[in-house]
Length: 326
Image (cartoon, rainbow, N blue to C red; front, side):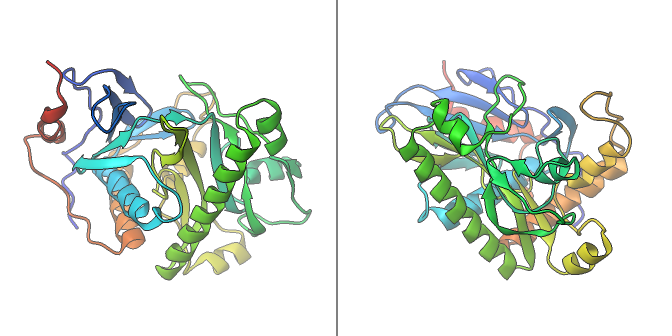
């Protein structure tokens, strides 16, 4: 597919919408309470920004639409496992969700010894650690090897630019971040969601390597799955065809997640300390195509870019007019 790379949504700052909150990738607005929604609702607009190493690296055309529509696919496919926050999809880049109190624990589930960030188990393992996140890993494991069983490796849920920090189950409970009942429910949901994701991914020739989940409490205390699920931003996928050869030779398994850009950056600087070089236009174009291909492989659907409106922001604004405040 020939993508129009001029249509980019770098931000979605809409002054007519109330109570803004601008995140790394999503621009959000909180709607006041209304009939049926005593705690209100949140508008989450997926921009085309790409984030890694706690910073914005670039804007990738069509990425926001891919993320929203991929998450929509998975929310629909997993609603029988765990209820989610979704109430409406007024635009290809937008989800309206129930207002929830996000739990202060980000639940990361890992099926392989993989990753490039400072909190990844591969990074820690190669530095000599064997005890991490309350689990003990055996000696002699190799890069990108499948774990004996999927592990939950929780981190603190950082806000306002702070860093996520590794946690163990005992720390979550002793610090009062979650009650035992909440942790049991969240961890059971996370493992079941991951198992469903791995099975469906395998059916499409993919390996769901690891992913993160965010959960929140609604006004009744019910725990809901929030944010996104099994997208190329929240998850690492490898192509099953080619994994074994890559593993045996010590090469990086073929993938289509944002590790493509992560790897490019890491090869040129320490992204936690140094200025990040400008991402070249050819890498932007390649990454846009990768996101589209990811959507199509994950969902089995053809990606249809929404080119309505003079710009993506104009289209989003028009589709959200019903929520404008006077």
